[in-house]
Image (tube, rainbow, N blue to C red; front, top):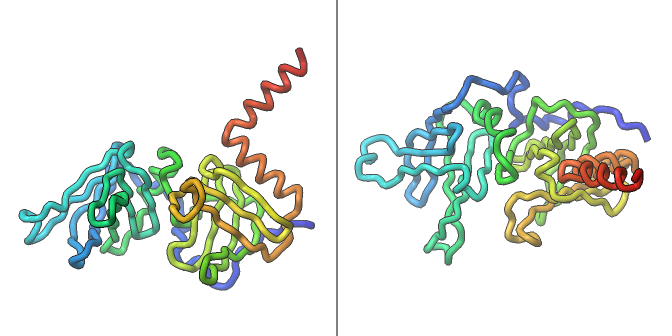
Length: 252
């Protein structure tokens, strides 16, 4: 079956980044942000540069506050970036949550988004970077209208498959994603109207701490397209090197 590009399903792109080029200047990137915690949170400056992420609370209570941190990227277990929210999951235990890893959330308070910082980080960080947004710079070679199945209901959107990334675009908050093929652990399908993308995104409720995205397809997935997707995912994990080795051994 022929796959034609579908550009819209209703008003899906409420949270999509602007279609203009994403590269906006060089680091450091400074943002007015609010650290979310039990007592309403505190405002301050969030800084993202080539070495890590830091936050320092400002204002009248800043001198008495202990809300000032800096994390090198190697000390961050997962860095989750949405258009206006950043979550930093550390390796530190949270004694108030029975030893669960401590997470810090920062919400931008101005009219800007993380456009520049995302463009800077998306090719520099490893699989611990989670893009909770659709990358508008990715040019999809083919697309599928889908429903992402959740425990309660789901979200409808479009899966776009580009040269080096897969993009899920939806108007449901915090559900859009952009994955590099190297950040996908596996792709599987139980039939022409279903596909599961298993990622390295941290999820304790899933096996092996991996998070699976189960998509119900509104249009049939051609076997050739699925094979192409499977190959891209596995080539990103080194399958091309293995194939080259086998070919060399056969030719000897």
